[in-house]
Image (cartoon, rainbow over all chains, first blue to last red; front, side, top):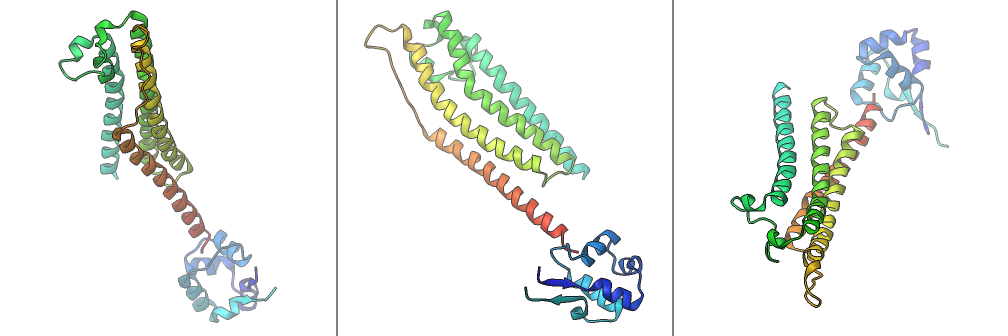
Length: 68
Length: 177
């Protein structure tokens, strides 16, 4: 998959716990964990917007496209 | 939700009643054809070839069994529908069992059509078995009634396929956070 999720890096940089982020965006910790590991088929714009809002970042900071 | 459950319960009663009617009418037709004649024309194949009174006991017994064969598939269709309503009651609309049952209904309806054609051929053979040489009959019939039955069979298969697609779509959506 050429899409890399860098959410764990951003969380570490911002010193934010996954539990807090999950509670803020309204998804379960299990789903957030799947998102962090890139094991999901997609991310809703609403989820992405809530993550960006909470972490004060841009979608490009969270997901990255890397050519194989 | 309670309203849906009520409707499904009613549907189950209708299905069970239909099953009873199929079995009871078949026994009545072959056991007491005289009284059955008051309500229906009876079995046209038999009536057009001299009626039940002219049949010997073995012909009547074999006729009873042969004539019941397609009805077995019809009963299987109704049993599948009954089980389908049970699944719907528990909210398993997109379950794999629901898809399997819909496809089973379609396949049983196809089997019913084929069994009906074969049944008519065998029944004519049985009825005319005691006829003198040269008067025995072999009939193969495929009527508009059979063609009409193809529609619900195809529809059931299509619905089964639609449930399969819906389940795949739901599973895919479940992987989007």
